[in-house]
Image (tube, rainbow, N blue to C red; front, side):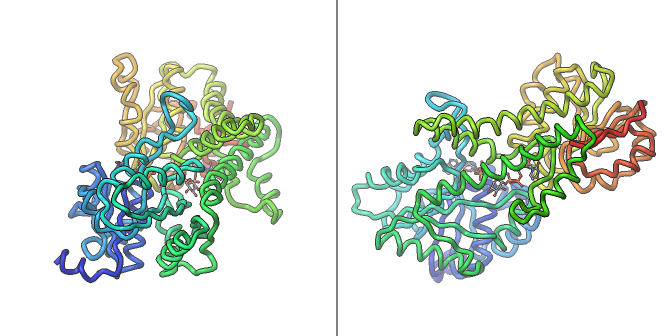
Length: 472
Ligand code: UDX
Ligand code: ADP
């Protein structure tokens, strides 16, 4: 059935990399373009098996994703490890492999590791037998398209590859609605007849569901740099409000009131002004460091330091959260039990890449506290992130993973809320208070809880950029 149907497909689209970006993006393309065949391939067999799981136990959690996969899988959406076959049959290939920050050599700690991208380009050259459009989807430093192109041009089969840049702006936790209803789709191409005709093909693909006026086209370098810039601005905005939150904590000001007041200025806008324990996620830090590296590379050292300071201040902000705990709990956390509510870097995802929780937990353990961690989706990733500590016999006994918030809070001295999961808003805090050691504190790293109510129950309540409500 699969093969028969495949012959009738109008176009064949392959995506290399079945992760947080490739999986949801391709699922939505397949959903919206049932006459095209979409195949997502990955070197990681376990991941592909999970995408194909009969019970839809997919490798990533994203609201609405299962429904889309259920609709399209085996109709025109396929997941496979047969990378050569998927390359061969494709008209359009998306590259959506991971690009972690380099850990070695030049640019270590800053530049992107393009090893996986380069390997992917080489596989395309090796297995392609016809001309193709190659779309760069991973978050990549500017001028990566050039590098990919150089590899693609090494083919000795006379094939022509057109490269496009089509950065992804979806945010985790809202990926499906972001894909269904994007603010914009950005596509960069070369200004040559072949480049522009490839561009048109991709525009037509998105136009199946995105209004054409929201599909922006630019030159390839602007497209690449726009992605880095968007993430740098967003990260800077969170850090800006967090820096003001720190000042609020020293004064009588309330950061939420300040955010509301400045957010009504239409030039500033009201979104992305939630003070927090700090930003996390796979993109912000990586892209800021990428930008820093690029600026240094081009001799713009002052500009580099400007963006680098956003990363540094974010790390300071994450540590500040634990410092507040320490100072509010009689300057010692030694042997105190801290319930950590949430480990994901934001709500509605199981992703823990660059999560503030990781720093918070490590700082707490550094203060000899005991931590009891609960997260509705992120515990498997938390165990991987903390593997080094779990292997250390001195530290491991001080870490527990819990299957509910109540279990984590039982006999705890304090709650540290790190992720803004909705379920934390509606817990029975009276019951939780009764089960905790006294004096009981709550540190709300996301300002989502009802402070007054908690204070009246008996908690001492500390938020971000909020005057503390303390019983002592
Ligand atoms: C981000 C960009 O939003 C997206 O366009 C890009 O494609 C990938 O990077 P993501 O990392 O998934 O998406 O999440 P985002 O919603 O941007 O949040 C990033 C971090 O900032 C999270 O840790 C979040 O909790 C934090 N944040 C966000 C705040 O602390 N306060 C805010 O007001 C907004
Ligand atoms: P992102 O958030 O950018 O989507 P992920 O790490 O979630 O990043 O996904 C990237 C995927 O790319 C991983 O599943 C990884 O196995 C896959 N990948 C990396 N290199 C290759 C390659 N050479 N060929 C195919 N897949 C690859």
